[in-house]
Length: 131
Length: 125
Image 1: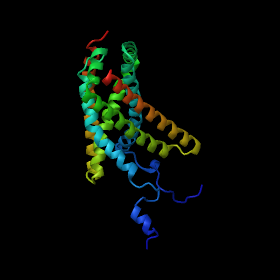
Image 2: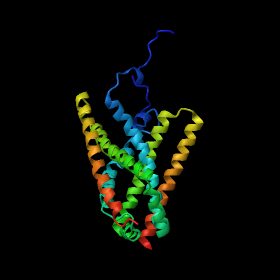
Image 3: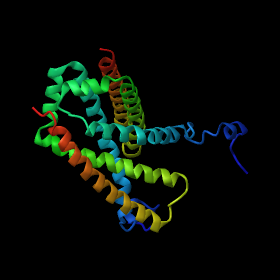
Image 4: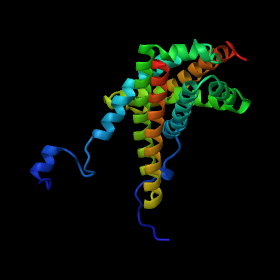
């Protein structure tokens, strides 16, 4: 192999957790797209009448769906919090390495806390009027 | 010495030819989604989700319908732009890339129209 210098690629950098946070913004964004499609489907079910709404809520109440909903909740909340972090960066603030690492930890902590609260409230909302 | 033409400098579109429009709309929709999604999530969590009558009654209220339509359209727009960037960054085969971008566009427009149409049915019937 020749020893010509290559332009830096992701693989040459020492791993830092801020890299994982960065790619997670995109991964959660794509997951949220699926959530948006489910949201539109759920609204259509509601507009289609009591039968289709009951069927849709039945689909959303299976164990697998509940697990996916918890995952979606974290995905959404993470993207929400990290999106705010991105908007702060867009103003030119918080870009120093130490600041970016601190805000990254803050986003993860906030996302986990908010997800826990939403899952807890969501279980209560699903229990109200449950068949 | 700059090789940019005076017209190019005035238009400010850069080498890709469409300027900062994509980037900017991504931010505008992101800002709008902060209050819209927070409102919808908090309101939704207080509702009896299994009750067809209650959900229909809530989403059919005029202002709730208006903001839910705003939410659906803004979500679709933001998501459409985001998926486009992801596809353009990671899918390099031209045919696959074009097919995925078309699929994403169709899905986003279909979902947006479905959501708006559904809320309008709930609001007017």
